[in-house]
Image (cartoon, rainbow, N blue to C red; front, side, top):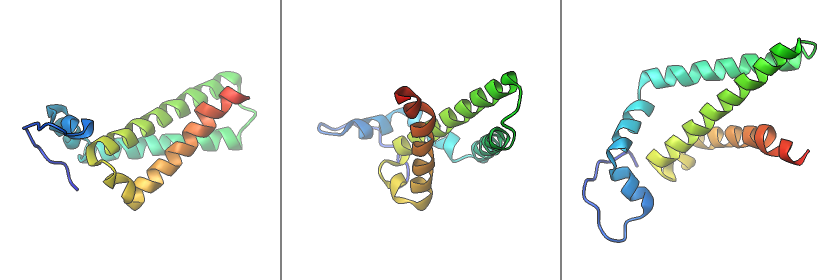
Length: 122
């Protein structure tokens, strides 16, 4: 189900349906569906791949470089989380039914579990 612009609110509508009526959702749809957004996400993916590759291939890097790579990887993961949440807000559960949606959620979920949740228990 694609994005729709319903202006009227009815009693009993869910929070997501009310949020979709908000003008910001139209802006969000314009951003997410743009070529510039796709290019930005692709650049973040490339940056993340480079960071992971450097962290794995060169563990003997100076501490400053390792810290920069860690911060850059955290930034990339935050962008991916915002991307998945934005798609879920815009397309509802239907986003999770697509193959790309499942793939994005799986990779982002693993990244969050490994980088943000697991260190809390170590």
